[in-house]
Length: 404
Image (cartoon, rainbow, N blue to C red; front, side, top):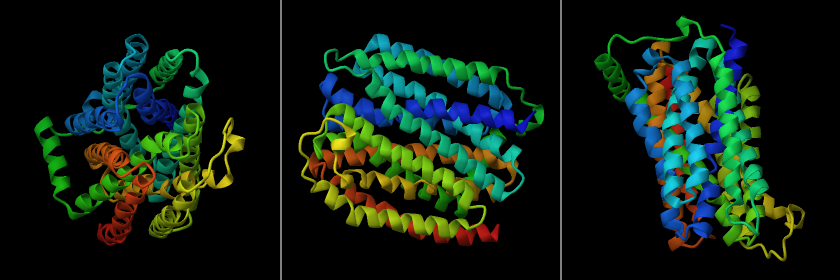
C-alpha cells in the first residue's frame, strides 16, 4: 500500500462530503423560500444530518475495522450518489430531510474510516497533527466550493433550477467511488478487535477516562460554534445585510475559505509551535472578532448590491472568524488520538463523531431559535459563551495529555 495513494483517497472522499454536508445552510435558505417553512422548522435539517452521524458512528465505530475501511467508504459513496438523484426528483422538504439523513449515515462511515487510517500511516504526533489539519483543510475547500456551485445552478426565472446541482454531486461521488475502488489497502491497516461485545466495552472504557470526557465536551462546544455560524451565515447575509440570495450564499464562502486557509496553515505551524499556544491565540482572536467586528457588520448601511464588489469591506470581516477557529477541531482530535494506542483509534473516533454531530445539531437549533426570537442581528453574539468555555478546556486537556 502506497501511503500517498491512501492519502489521495482520503482527501477525495472528504472533499465530496464537504460539499454535501455543508450545503445544509444553503438548503435551509432554499427551504424557507421554496418550501414555505420558517427558521425553526428549517433548522431541523441539521438534526437530520447530524443525528444519523452520531447514531451510526456509535454503533459501528468499534466494529468498523472488521468490515474494512475501504468497504465502508465505498458503501457511503454509493448511498450518497443515490440520495442526490432522489433529491432531484423529490424536490420537497421531506426529500431534503431524507438527503441529509443519508449523507449523515454515509459520512459516519467515511469519517471513522479516515480518522482511523490516519493513525496507521503516520509515525508521530507532529505527522498526525499535520495530516489531520491538511485533511480538514481540504474539507473546508470543498465547503467553499459548495457556496459557488449552488449559485451557479440558481435561476430567478426557474425556482427549481438549483436542483440540477445534485446531478453533478452524484457524478463526483461516483468518480470518488471509482478511485477508491481501485486503491489497494493492505490488511495491516485494519485493526481487528477481540469480539463485538469487547469492542463496545472498549468504547465505554474510553468514556470513563477524564481525558475523554474533557475532550468530547470540547469537541461538542467547537462544533456548536462552527456549525451554528456556518449553517446560518447565508440567512444572516440575506436578512441582516439584505443581500440578494446568490450573493448571500457566495458571501458565506468567505467563512469556508478562511476555515480552509486556517487549517492548512495550522498543519505547517504546529510542526514548530506547541498546539496549546496555537489554540489559545486562535480562540482569543475569534472572541475579539465577535466583540469588535460583528457590531460594525450588523450596523452596516448596505445600499443596492448587484455583485460582491458592491459590498463595503467591513461586510467581509466577520466571516474571517473562520481563520481563527479553523485549527481548533483537527488539533483537538489529533492531540487526543495521539495520546491513545492505535488499536483504540476507531473507538475514540466513534466518540469524536458522535459528540461532534450532537454539537452541530444543537448549535444549528440554538442559532435558529435565536434568529427567530432574539433577531438575526443578535444571534451570533451568543457564540462567546462556548468560546470562553473552550479556552478553559484547552489547558485542562494540556495537563491531562501530559500525563499520558
